[in-house]
Amino acid sequence: MQALHLDLLRYWMLIKSIGITPDMEEYEKRKMSIFNQLNFLGVVTGIVVPLIGIFLNDHLPPLAWFVAASPLAISVIVLWLNHEQYYEHARLVYFSLYPVATSLVYLGKVDVGMELFFLLYGVLSVFFLHQIINIVFAFSLSVVCYYVACIVPHEFYFTLVHANYYFYVFNHLTALALIFYALYLIKQENTGYQLSLLNQSEELRRRSEEVERQKEEIASKATLLEDHAH
Figure 1 (cartoon, rainbow, N blue to C red):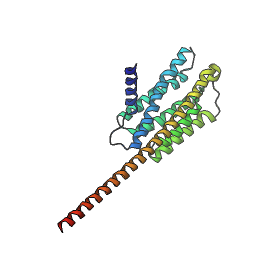
Figure 2: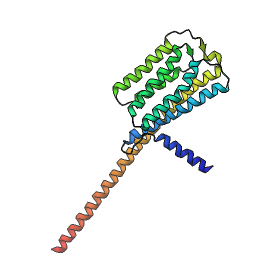
Figure 3: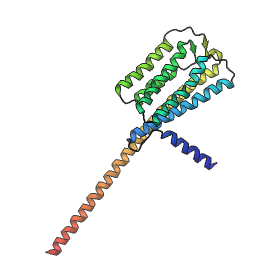
Figure 4: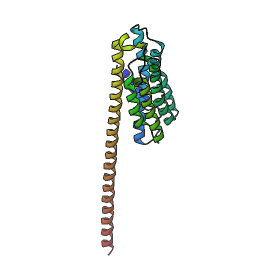
């Protein structure tokens, strides 16, 4: 059991470290780790949600299966781009394809209860993207997709809340869980980064004091040698 736990921990650390290089700044390493975790959860979601639909024997329309499985394809692409060190491209793919894929389902007049995910895409794009033009593009895209999908009236021919209420609730709870987990990871890593900066500052202060003490000792010994010489 302990060996299995160690193996799982090692695999988890490998997932978190995809695309991370030794020359990266500490803060960027932490952000990359969070991004990798979110994409791994996307892979898991893209596998688990369709399996739940199959298990429940739901007769869902093709677009519903599309949006359920799309996280698997998108997150695999993003993780591969991270591995190849196309970092900004990976983030643009994530914050472009996810909202577009979700809105396409609503445009196809299928309501699967994914509205909260637009909030997730918009908030995370501000944190993860670097260039301001990419941030504005990704955030605006999430807003536009949300407006087109959820604000503009649609005559849905399929509504998940009527077909399977519990699955509908599950989708909302999944979105809330991912939003909470993402914000929790961001807060945790920011706190850890601040602590690491404080520790580095304390270490520098300690070394500086040690150097000053050594200088004083050298100066004191030099003075004694001069006195003996005279």
